[in-house]
Length: 81
Image 1 (cartoon, one colour):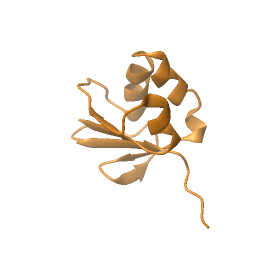
Image 2 (cartoon, one colour):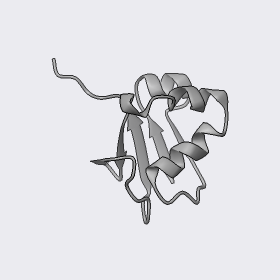
Image 3 (cartoon, rainbow, N blue to C red):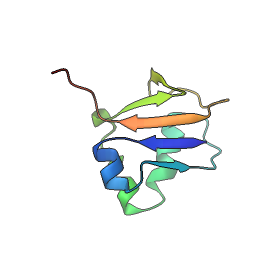
Image 4 (spheres, rainbow, N blue to C red):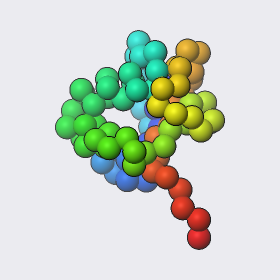
C-alpha cells in the first residue's frame, strides 16, 4: 500500500511517500510496524495525538481497518488562516 507523509512527518521520516508491504489490520498496527523500522519513524509517530490519518483519502481514526485500503496518509492537524 502507498503510505504518504506530509509536513513535519515527512521531514522527520525523510520521504514524502513509500510503498509498504504490511499485514497490519488497522492503522494502529501499521504505525507499530513503522515505529519498529528505524528511529526516524519512532520519532515521527511518538505522539499520535499530534497526528491525523486518512485512509484512501478519507479522514479517519487510528483504529480504522486497513482491509482493502490502497493508501494511508499521515499529517499534522490542519489550522485555518
